[in-house]
Image 1 (cartoon, rainbow, N blue to C red):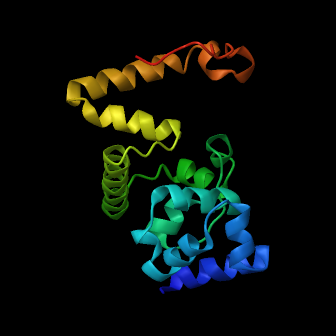
Image 2 (tube, one colour; image 1 turned 45 degrees about the horizontal axis):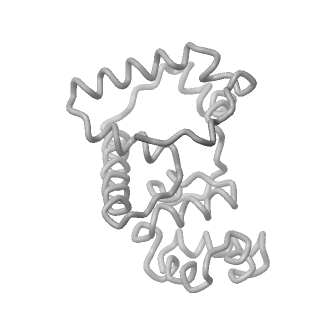
Image 3 (cartoon, helix red, strand yellow; image 1 turned 180 degrees about the horizontal axis):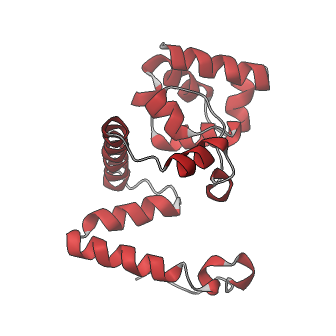
Length: 174
């Protein structure tokens, strides 16, 4: 067990009293949680890490890439953080080491999403579906997809929760 696994284990025990009670809270078999600590976080399923991170309110990216336990901020809360404000003030650019880390994360996600698809595992995470289809496109298709998604962000019906139409229960995916 590595340092991050030890720290995560301590964090869980501090907040939930035991690993077994935490596993029950997130509807995960205790043996699965235990194997995450034994095999290491980087060798674990993304789905399991998402469950853990979501319950604990911690950033999965920081856990995997930086081996740190840090609070997760929803997208709209990130701009309020001191780190983000500092980045804006300093007009910070992505360094080559940060770019390498981002590429490692993307490679990891591609492997996990491909593995999930191969094994007919569907997480129901919309971002996973979006990435899966995005990576099937060639570079022109990806540019077009980015442009169209950016257009959708300018339409209230797609961004304002109060304007979202009710889901049609009879709608079938093609």
